[in-house]
Length: 246
Image (tube, rainbow, N blue to C red; front, side, top):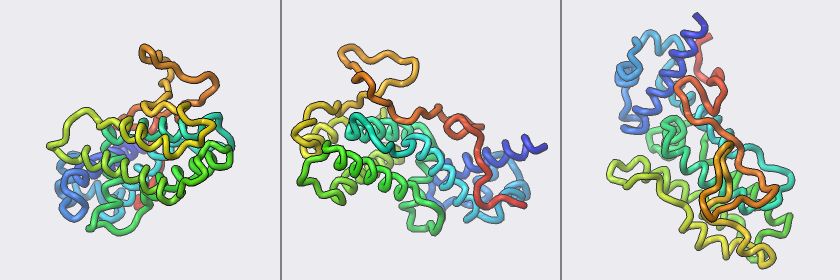
């Protein structure tokens, strides 16, 4: 019984994410979410007291996915700017394929939405901490304005998320490589300039580098994160999120 209830909860979160992603929070009636999930409104209200609570659960799930993609900011890293580049590529790819993550980002920018943890806030804080790490390790150019750099990296991810929501946008996920090719010479200190691969240097577990592309020895890849599954968030079950029935 508990397994079935947990499955229904996950299904409702995923269905709500899909409906929010298409129509925004205000334009997403409870009935449409229930129809997509193929559950009754009574079943929905057993898990979530109202649409607001369901939206909070979607956004909390998105934050959990985001934290899985980024991992914690290390206290030391052999190439902190490469970590930033690699993680941005991983996040852009995940935004392209994960409705819950994309909907969580979208709710944060939705004028009809109020409340809930913001994935954008977590992403900005993570980027800032990695850039501060780069500065402490002497990898950041001395004239870099931290606020400007954080805003630029956040803005490019906003663009990726917006393009994924645009039905007329080209596929696949737009590459961040041109952005990093332009930005890295301004970010990197002279001593490390040219050592960061704008295309991303991370290799997924079990995968071989592309021809002509080799990962630097000892360079950690971004935090491993499983492909999205209906029953999972980053390889672990959905946690009990806000808004559940007691």
